[in-house]
Length: 185
Image (cartoon, rainbow, N blue to C red; front, side, top):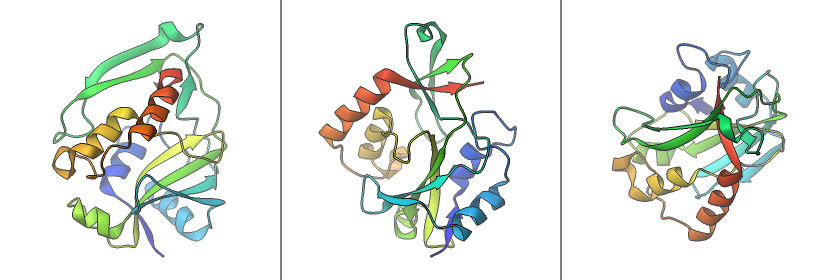
């Protein structure tokens, strides 16, 4: 099985101007090589048959992706309408500024099958493509953001995967994201 880093994930996990809230201490090729050379601690089912998650112990200084919202830090939350790419419509997002999350214990690589990536117009030269990565304290998935679930349900032409909305999974996602937020330096 060969895992490759997709251009979509490369831009988000390894931006041209490095940021403290992305993967640290390795290059895109080193990250890809690590996922191919080291067996995951766990393999989790993703939200659809074409998605799986590979859990690896964090070998970098990458910090956790999310921070719990508390009365002490709620005033540090910010929001704006943003798009992940020029082709997507902006959606409302929120994040913390001015917080220092702990170093993550795990990196959870989100993989899509080559067949699904071809369906989405992003073919790869491999069996599985990295489309994202979660930086967590526990060896498990962080719920997909509600807006990502909606985008997926809208279909490939709107930047999603075409997977219908699962109302129960959506409610679990809202419950998590009401209590947590991403952070930015």
